Image 1: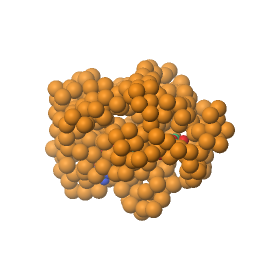
Image 2: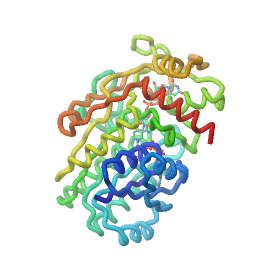
Image 3: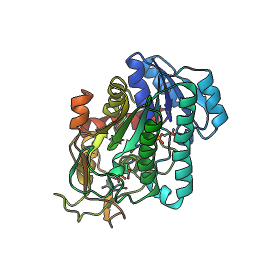
Length: 334
Ligand code: NAD
Ligand code: WQD
């Protein structure tokens, strides 16, 4: 089975490429390298022994896309490509709508024209909007209280995928709503290495530990949580990647939607402590004001994926911290 990964040199795409290759799938990647590096392909090869075929191309380039689909017969597409910086999306909404939605429409057009019917889409817990402190199931409402254009693009793309299936009932769509991916491959060969300035907690922790960012700002300690700091459902990226393998093996007609999370919430202070314990050194931090739009506690009910995909997270936050530190050490040696 041959699968095209859009955004496959990115953080989640690269880990998914590894898990797919390990399961015997043929993987090809298209990425414009806006937020990833070509050397990721070497990392995938070191882990699996296979270097996926790579197209350095932009999904907004419809001619190139048509060319790629003309010369291949893909059984499925996993659509990771997109811009994902929440704060940036507020300042550059048109860029986010154009890139995230434009790429998806181009991809669906190319798939339809060339007879590729299966797509797995990287959605996000952000589609649940401002629902705070409840274990989110796939039945929870979506689209209400989304506070930024990035989140809106995820919600809109879910709708586009659903509408496209109504018009093309032979399409098979799986929407995976990721919670907070963290960690790296245990080998240290791939991990999160963004080109942009990070604003998610884990990449910031990484940059504070290397001294690139002087101090971690903890955004508020007056939330209604046991230690007052925000709580999230941090999922190890390798568990998340395995979720894609289980999803592709279970695809069927219509639209399937799954939360991929652990079902547990961890606070910012607990994350700092876990990193310190794994690395054996302290992480400088200060308590600052809340970040606008943040909620106290967001976590998944992953039961549907457990029952239907036979998928369950196996790795812990401590594993993610260990693998992140190992990855940072490997980066230093390169
Ligand atoms: P990433 O930035 O590491 O990977 C995305 C890749 O897409 C990058 O390599 C980038 O160069 C590529 N890309 C962007 N626009 C493109 C275009 N027009 N043409 C070709 N390539 C393009 O991000 P990630 O963390 O691996 O996320 C993958 C997907 O998962 C994204 O859609 C993201 O929104 C979604 N997601 C991520 C998180 C998270 O916290 N990391 C959470 C929920 C959902
Ligand atoms: C986690 C916690 C912060 C940075 C975002 C997107 C969401 C999804 C996942 C893609 C919160 C706190 C953070 C820092 C801090 N991405 N924090 N200091 O906000 O859950 O979700 O990423 O789809 O759409 O919105 O993740 O990592 O930004 O924050 O104290 O420097 O860490 O307040 O409690 P979030 P995050």
